[in-house]
Image (tube, rainbow, N blue to C red; front, side, top):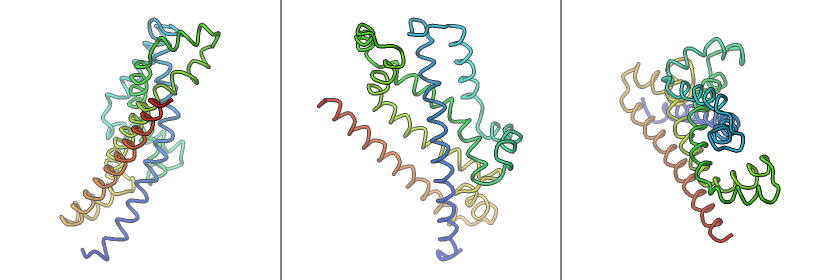
Length: 222
């Protein structure tokens, strides 16, 4: 396959991959952030200590993290069809991508929030601040650099998930690699696809690291 033939395929695959990953990341953050905070708040010694709730939520998160994505993708076909109307295409793939990544991101959020100095929480409590205030004014701002790092890691994981999704009806670079690289024995196209994926991951990592460093500098000068 010549470069002129590869270029439109790679461009469309890249657009589809970015579309899936960006929307899945947005849904993952919306679902995983409150879930991770809930795990911290309901844990032993937490502001909303409730061990039964904590154990149930923790078990759900652990089960979600332990399922191989390719199995989860197939198992969610009926649910994806119910939500989107189809289980094929980039829009449909957002559903399993987000559901697969939410438990992963929730654990990253939990770890980040646990690192916040408890003395700051006690200070806000002493001033009469309630739980919403503590979460909004202390936990999230103090954990922000670590949370951004977690989002970066999650985006990279989703890029890998999206490549797998291409093998079972999704679009994107994974689908192009399987269809035009593997099935047609075009090693060159396969290698070029891998290079594009590596470049995307590298750019995401550089952006994430840059934002984390910026937030860290602002935190030291605040």
